[in-house]
Length: 219
Length: 283
Image (cartoon, rainbow over all chains, first blue to last red; front, side, top):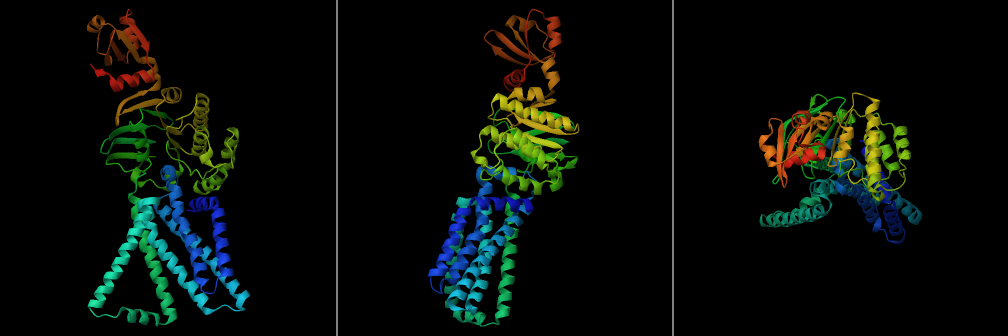
């Protein structure tokens, strides 16, 4: 596992100019934009960080590299676990960066850090991990190019399902917005706990799906 | 070390049916044309593709239950795959250090320097020869018991091929229990290195013999139609019609030398045996 992590970090180094550019954009946005840019800066950095794990899968697939990779003392299980771990470590690290940039900016500009900033930061992190959980099985199943098309198709299905649910709710005279308001009105600590539990459940489910995809793959 | 019994893998346009054995201390060669099924055999042994039926044991264990620990004892070269081209040698050293318990970093770097491979350059910028050398050095640097080498000399010039074969000889000299399964479509590579040879043709093993026996006892008889009708055909394995008469493959050269002094007899080479075994008609 450690060997794989080192390999991916070395591949990350190949893209260091890209990541420096991303960091500059984030810092620039934090300095020059208004307060609404808070969630953008944190979200942008976290997404770019965590999604590099998907790029690392493309790097592994390049030139049939997976065949050699799995002839090394690496199991398919440890490969999948490492990819999720790598995504979460990178996403988490970039999230910390983003949050620090925003906090620093607020301290310099306003002399205090608003509670909204902290809440926004803690909402973004699980969202980033859920996106990782959704995208990882697609990337492993379909690879780089086809994976993107598959993700777009999946998002369309989610979107259409949402519309259908809304239509059905309307037909049954169920007020969805009041349900969401009730959820939002719940005790904040319970809400955060629920978000964390749901995030980890989604990640675990995604991991199981990815593992079964990898076990069936032939190289 | 390795035993494959009636291993089958079926694709739409290709079927593999293979039984072979690599004994401890042996260098076993697998020879066949491109597309004969050599890489499929390696991939099945490594679990990269699944077999449809048959049995494989590696290190005296069924391949289904081999684990990470068993892979520690394997050194692998694949013809069409290697470390990501975006990495450099300096990048892969810590990776190998953490993957292999017995990775010998100093021996690895010594070999890298011996062959003049650049440590900071991306692998994708390497020449074919440099890539092949790196693959072999990687395979032999963690005290493996068994090397699986699929076309390790493909695309190399004669000098580079000799250098690589020398590395493999040195590897075998260090421990007499080590084994190698090596494939190639260049027969001269295998002639000087291997203890025994398997020939694969259209997914089937068509021939297995000790290299010494092949080179000493196999021969080609070039005979006229008259000689063909008179000759004892008990030791003729395959024959082919030529414009002068018949070309016959035998595994009893001495018998024909002694009993038929007038016929033309050529010593057997691996290439000739392949050609006859894969194309000749059975008597």
